[in-house]
Length: 92
Image (spheres, helix red, strand yellow):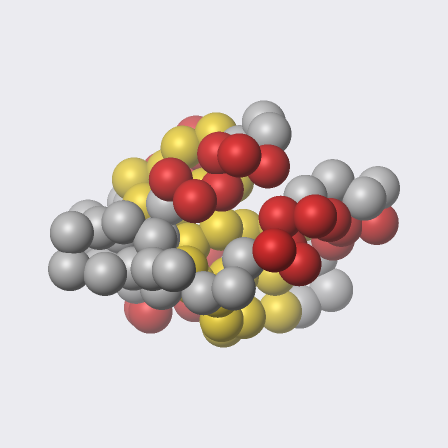
């Protein structure tokens, strides 16, 4: 997952993740913490751990993000791109 982020995101992209320091350390990308579903649209990408998905965290957000595209999935993580307009705001 970290290699995917390094290879398929721009340096200025913002990654939303429950542990932003790990993303920053492993990818050199800007990362912000995601504690509530409302935080997800603040980023360019959101990474959801499989355990979080199984626990039902972010369930509603992952369904309600109309402008999204799943770019990466493995047994532990899902990376979703949030499509944005030219001002950096979510489209919709």
